[in-house]
Length: 337
Image (cartoon, rainbow, N blue to C red; front, side, top):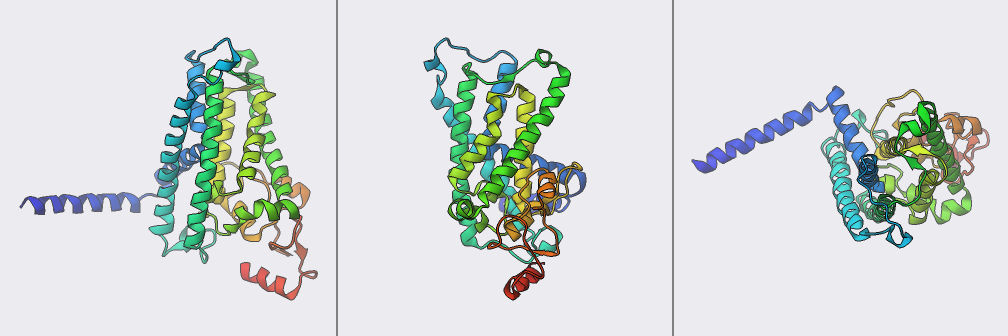
């Protein structure tokens, strides 16, 4: 009798959970997915710890030692916090997206997948998770160092009172930092697609032709460090309120996962491309180098257009006209389209 009762409860819970997932759509589904992606993005680069540190400094809970040697006081505590929480959030959030779409809805990819007829092999999936975890560890280490340094009074241009620079500068700095991040990452990304850098560094990221959420950090560690440096460097020369810094970084990381998710997602804002934009970058290789804006690609002629041919062996982002392409290149072009 007791076993039958337990089995009934389990069946009820299973049906309830299934009902919840089947109705994970509309505003609630979009909202929940957005929160999951945002948390996963912060965990990948370890930025969640920086949010906590800046929040504590906002309310005067930081320490300001007098000697430089104390700037990394209790560093081991920051490392432990950074590693554990980053791993838990990363595998939990990305794992949920992977399960909900790539496993649970694998038989209906036309409803949600950017490239519905192609999936990563299990070998590539394992590789991207391993490589992503290596870079996750690097990101958590950097974040732990920065969080400890900042908490102990280390120098940055981050400030905590809007009145220090005024509301006008506060608003302008959001735009300045956002443009800095997007323009510099476009330039660095395009550089990584030059033949030498692509073949020796960036090619490893393009192994994932049908990217997933785990692909976001699956790149050469040197590339990961370079991108991190570019995005974080303004805290040493551009005065920014901590909300500006965390807000822009969080937004960029959030869309970094959307761009690599392989899932059809429309942009929230008019300037933000949908998820097909970067998915096409993985599909066609040397094109669509931007991340959060398409303007740089459109200005430089590296925005993908359908009457040009792109593949891994056609460098510099311009592609080839249909008249210039070889029969093999045309054949591959029409298969991809």
